[in-house]
Length: 217
Ligand code: URA
Image (cartoon, rainbow, N blue to C red; front, side, top):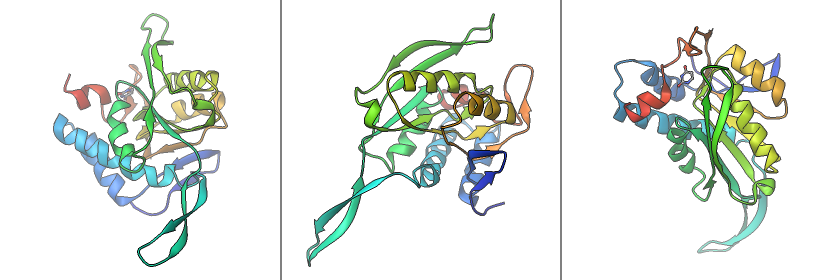
């Protein structure tokens, strides 16, 4: 394990962040014996580490600062940053990304799956007004069917967002395909691509229900 982020040639917008620290935390998340407090800590740490790749091409603007010795050039964020967790489990990634993006504002999207139709049903959304000018990090630890993520990205674009990244912890081929087909312009970052989905649309081997494990429900 370990090494550089992997680009998968059939999906150039996908980056699998294969760093040993990320893979160690991911293994703790996968372990059924990991209790909610430890699960929360690892999800926070892992999300923070994912940010290094997810923010690699973030635009900066040149500024000047005065050190105690002299003036020098530096950089600052070129745009506002907005984090948008998909409720519930996406909330578990916010603290980790705030670790590197402390000024980021946070919007929310609530989506549940209608069991009868298996379609994503949005039930809540609230975004900062300036989405059109912001760098938006859409967050959900699990890219499973890809339908909720695609619906969330539709909503963000509907509110004017133009620069969106999707950051997950685990993905699987069907979810990646659905999301990529709907939003080929949105780069996806994940720590691993698992085998697929079971009959209940859980990622296999996955880590179970991320929201339940995070909140202890
Ligand atoms: N959501 C989860 O929390 N886990 C899965 O495996 C799939 C969707």
